[in-house]
Image (cartoon, rainbow, N blue to C red; front, side, top):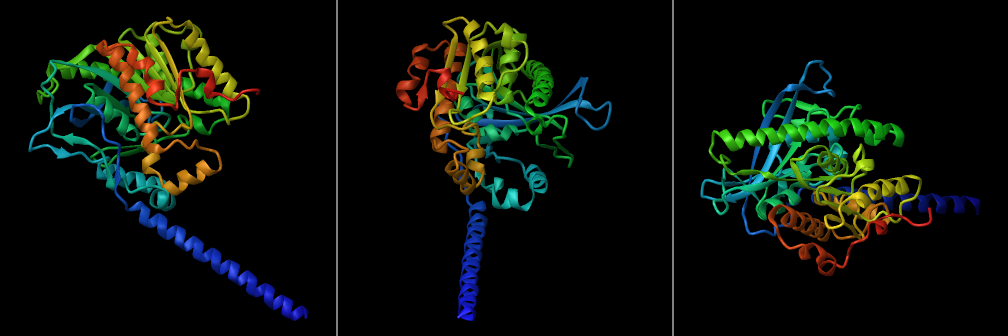
Length: 416
């Protein structure tokens, strides 16, 4: 009898193991196939086609404090999206250049890049290379787009393209040893180092590191605006000469980029309007606030627990409550998560996204809906404060999108 029971148990275990092996094999096969699918990003909603160019700019007056070699000058890869006049010589832009994708694959490895991400060479943006600037306006306002943490500028292509399609020159930048990777056509690749990786640090230590990093980013923004001024005066291609309106400058950032947007507007009168997308504020702006129109766009943090959410809410309220009543704006987007504002919702495996949503780590707002709402909030705000559109367009957002609530406190958990 015991022998029969043991035989049955062994058979049952064998069946379970075989079933598990089949399931794992099927999952891996599906992930491998999914990796190779085309990914089409959300189409821009504005009237203009979108052009894109990149620049490699070095600030000879500053050193990179995160570089492993002392004396390294501050170098930035700048991405510009702009309203375009598409001609037969224009070509569809790659999401990322091949040399950049190769470096990223080497850095992330087989599992993270091949199984848990889409093939970035098959991600389809809506930009054109070698396109002229659109002739329909004499000059276009500028929006600086600051990525979050170690994120790459390309992670915010959807927001950048949508802004450009509404008549803005959008500039973002990647920095060696701060962005997760920064790749150059000459084969150089720089990886984010531990000094700037504040995400992996305890909160108090990370806050100090993030504040220091934010200060460097603000200097980057100032440098990039000087470079745009030079392009406006002396663009050798003629594309941007006399066409960049640096009297109308806005800034939008996600995560630490949002904190940078707030502090930059506090520090520099060049900023005419700013947006913080789901970013914890740092720096003197918390106590002193600012005077320019400012917009907090938040994801849904109501399920989060611990001491940090009330601290974040308090920092945002400190800034918001001191802003002029007619220029302060705030919305919370139900079901949105911290990454609802970036292309990572499209470039990461849907299996990973669904798993995180199932366990409650991510909100369940659909990815295209999330980008649609984010795009509308961002371009509407800048339309009002950089182009003079009616404020009713902003106040009407909650009626257009039921997920949008004009209430900062809705984003955070209650009864801590």
